[in-house]
Image (cartoon, rainbow, N blue to C red; front, side, top):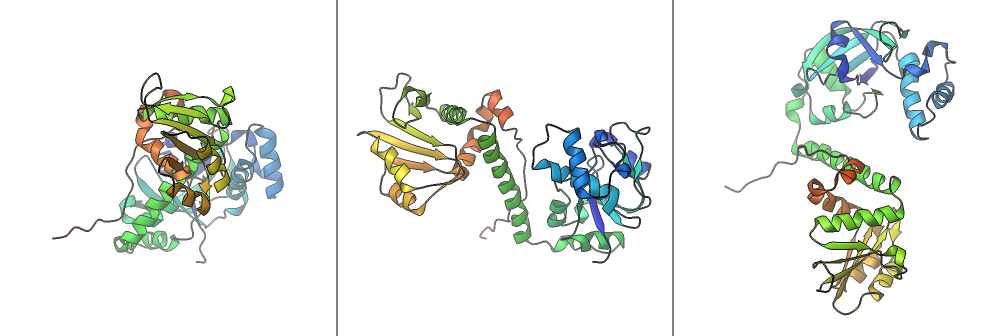
Length: 333
């Protein structure tokens, strides 16, 4: 495709103004006039680091890259697609001006370009794959995989949205589910200490109907949590839990170590954010009183009991219940 096509997200507080007044805009007012910066990505990254001391290392090139593309890479005549949350339309236009710094117009969103809007198309006219691409978490991005759909819409032609098959819908659904799982695991890894992670697992067990107490600070020999059904902890089954706040693969030796601490009539539960080796899984299958919970299984348990979490843990994992497209289910006549 020779025609450059950009996608842009703008804050909902703009309302319909970008379409009514024919402009696109982005924030980061502390960056000042981008036209005064040297025209290199490194210069933009350095300026971003200076202005945002709290920015995480990985976020700097992403955010600075957005600003660089808006000021330098975007050219007059390029096409731009703006998915508006205000009217749920996708507005397609042509960039009509160079970069303009206008803090007098908006102190919060001073970086601006003017656009000639050419087409306003309902989201329902596009395939799930195209909608997923323009749902990018980045403010300004290049549309490549589904560019033909947007060009067809601009030309008044059929976009091919009706031709989307169940396989494409399932792919989008899987991507959303995987992104959510990644988010949860990253939060549990980065926002909690190992001891706090043990307390989180204990809280999850209480929401599953168990009484659970964290024991890892009492020199118990590797058992982090003890869970049981009765309040005093005398009635079986007694569950001994070991937690590993790691993204690495847990091998059989660690699993055997837990099992060795289980006495007659007790059960063992190993919880990790990562995965288990095939040898560890083979060992689990041979031990009916042992259960291994990996990152994916832990996320499923969180989904099942999230509504009953204490507010502090819902704040740790801010999730909302929603519906996403799934594969069609065939039914027998």
